[in-house]
Length: 146
Image 1 (tube, rainbow, N blue to C red):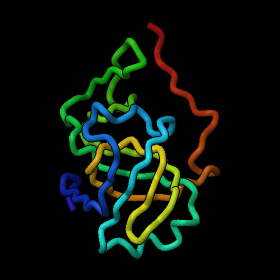
Image 2 (spheres, rainbow, N blue to C red):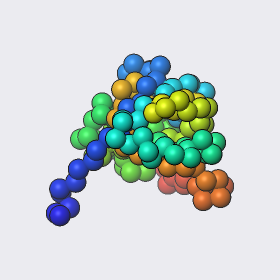
Image 3 (cartoon, rainbow, N blue to C red):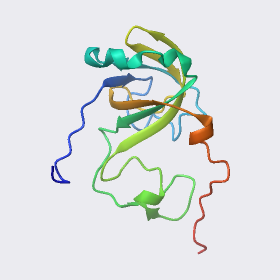
């Protein structure tokens, strides 16, 4: 397989109260928005034992993002940065990642809190959030001085 021959298959769709990118919060963790993750029928078996996870990492395709931008200006900063040094949704491969709290499961539907994706966003994967592995309290973002 050549490096340019990459295919992703959505495993489901995210349902949220946000109808478009301008409505979605910058980060979901602080907003407390409730959403639903619908898993497609062929992937339902992968949800076995998911109720044992208090939090999940959702990986999704930001299908309404631009893919031609390499410079971004975070809303809370004055300076622009390379897109790979930001959390901008506009990037060559608009893959989104968010941590949500699992509130419940009913069949192929997961009710989650802290969603920041827009309604109808394709879901690529779900992973359990492990505080011992996924949290790096000493991590920093250091910006160059102007």
